[in-house]
Image: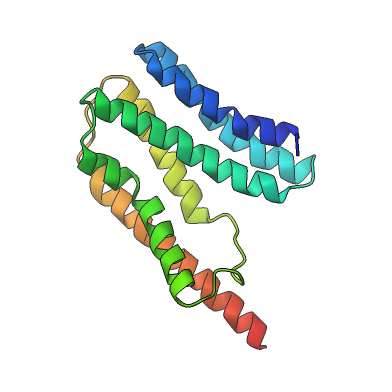
Length: 171
């Protein structure tokens, strides 16, 4: 469904491609526009359009595409190690672990997917880290444990939601 919020979500794809241009101002602009599109797409969907299932899938997919594409570019340029990229992807690794749990317990079909507060925190930290790195700065050491902690909170939030939903169904 073509709505303004979905167009904003989709725009993060072409914005990621701007990272093929190795200029700090172009990359900074791409990140700022990606951050703004991420802020406004959900707001517009909730307040002016009806949120769509397609939009609920498109938004996090485009966030992940943008971040992964930029991480690969920084890795190829030797500006980011694989280990630091994995730290930045702690939230995504937590999502994979939870998905494997749902598959193993045969609960994937019944799970009600929704956005996570801790996921939004992780995305915000990722975007600001990319902004910092795009200025030619090295990966800050203090972010490694921060990304791990946020990834842990994402996993905890997922299990709490699962527990809460299961409890509601039994009442």
